[in-house]
Image 1 (spheres, chains in turn purple, red):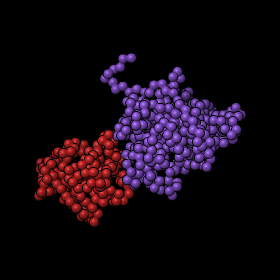
Image 2 (tube, one colour; image 1 turned 120 degrees about the horizontal axis):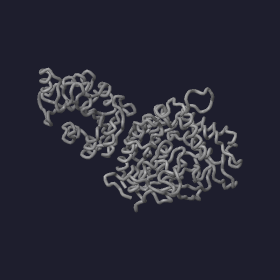
Image 3 (tube, chains in turn orange, brown; image 1 turned 120 degrees about the vertical axis):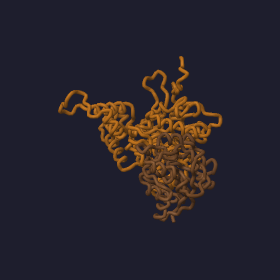
Image 4 (cartoon, one colour; image 1 turned 30 degrees about the vertical axis):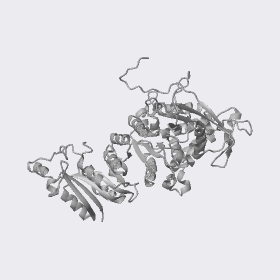
Length: 381
Length: 196
């Protein structure tokens, strides 16, 4: 293929394959429950250097997984969820870094989770799968780092719930993370955030096909509940401005039909999003992920003093928020920044102008990506 | 910006001791902080609102907080910095008095530099019937960001009326230190101020 030399060649990571790591040692969870053994599926992009100092962990958010970048050979529409930022010449430059994506414990993309068989019964765990917290994830991810021979991550990076994991890494394992990139996150959820999560959970739990979380053995899935949960969640990921711009009050047909069928484009869009998601995601994992969000509060054990909670961190921080994100607004990111400043810890903070609401962290905004690129250049390997 | 040659930068650098903590308000591309960190061993953070400057500062390895100074420094702890610097920005602030008080709350000491409106060339321009346009005030009346210009005498009064001590003042014209008739001969003033 001819390459125009005048253009900067920015290549994706191409075809990728997931890998699986099995862990035999039991994992004691924050809740007190114990997972006797577990699998984590993960993907890697780029090469681990000789000193194993160039590894970046990308943590996923509520509905994400280990497939961060690249495509699966022969599978259409299989692009990773953050493909635009990972690759040769991209901000997470695979010429320089070894990038690792992992599906968290409790997930539904291959790592041990509610849809995996419970060794005690041979049937899917379902509702018996223990509630997993963000700090449980960090310990499971650390086991994967051990397996890969990575003593310390050059950086742990994530948006939303992924950003919370980056923050938790810095607090829990301060010697194993050199930079934390905390994007579109918050130090804890507000009552409003929890309220949205609970409505989503109620939609799932009250679906007649939920069967107390043991729907697998009934051969059904709580699609209606999961669809509603996703539709609700999706609204909170977008901004009012963006919805107005993209959909406004545009109708699918001319004039009002004075019934309850789909009329407005936004209704059509949200239902399609809900259907698509419900078709591929596990309802129990959705419950578990929202609960992990609700429980996340590193200052909980420090009488609410976030600075005290973050004091053990040795990492340098980049905190990023987006102007139209109302789910985790810039003010929530600033709470993290001010706590770090109070501790005289190293932090940079950027507030990116973007119309895409909470979802902005996944978009290819020039300022945002230039900032990520510039920050990662200061990472010493 | 003719950066390293900026007279106020050299003065500010001479006032910062190794290991001291500096907060640079409106830090631009981070050049002053880089100077303070590399030449004086300071530990610094910048505050900057402009996207391009934030990016430039991050590229220089500077810790920068993207924030609007007009909203004050809420979130910053009292007395958490040795020096809070406002370099040639005071005259462009809308909330002038508030930012000076905020600097003195967050910093043990504030460093403020501004173009002196009382500079003789500016006075000549006014006598000639025109708004001053100079190296330090390179804007026309209709496009200037400078909404609160003052003279050295004005700033002295401002401090005296608010129980603010002037620890030191250096005045320059075209990079040269001015030793007499500051308000007439100086185009740039650099102040070190503290709470009384």
